[in-house]
Image 1 (tube, rainbow, N blue to C red):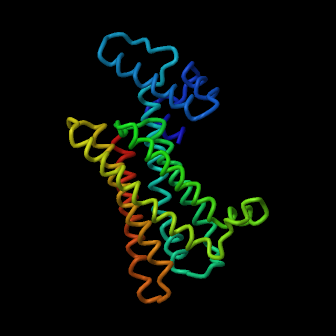
Image 2 (cartoon, rainbow, N blue to C red):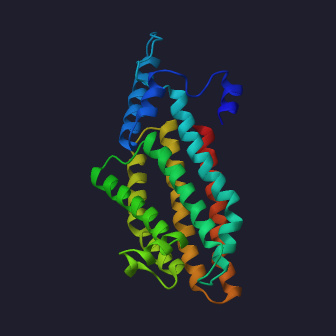
Image 3 (cartoon, rainbow, N blue to C red):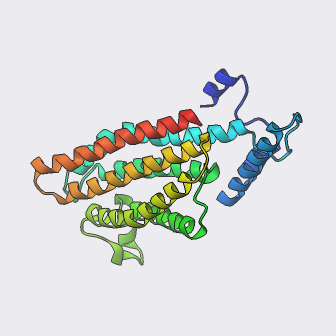
Length: 262
């Protein structure tokens, strides 16, 4: 990624300056996000004047764009390349499915890549505090359930104090929780579309719409996965599994479009 950035722009994406040092020294997500937001604000202010000197602790707009693009490009890459794995894993209804672990790992990577990029370099996020908090809780809970009901997560739970959460068929239990969380997540997405409908047309608004459209497609994929693993008939199970695979292809297109437009 760094090499390609240098070839395209003849400069390193993370130069040796106060911005880069602030990001390196950041101890948590809040610190990183604060540095990013300060930098983006400084860049926007400078773009409206002839002053060329940036804030000493400012993140250049190019770096912010690269973080956003890289995160969503990775999410799209995971959705496309992992599609064959996701499809095969869903079609095998055996509780001892050997594809469960790699499928869960790729799913978490894709979710963290897009979620991390949106958290650090938000594009018109939800303004309503209550709805924003609900989305954060729903997103974190979704990732926790993915890890909890994955193969490694279940092995860990079986040995600890949380052994009561050990499931006989972790994939089915995880799918139930994952599908149930679609309800509050869908509410947040619809509310965000409502907020965006009142905003003037801009690139930021377009990126936010693309992101929410990708999220909507993801919801359909999650429900399709739930239907697939609970359908014991191979001939009919192929239908929801194919819908899930199609959703991953659409997500790849939307995430890639967002990465390129930014």
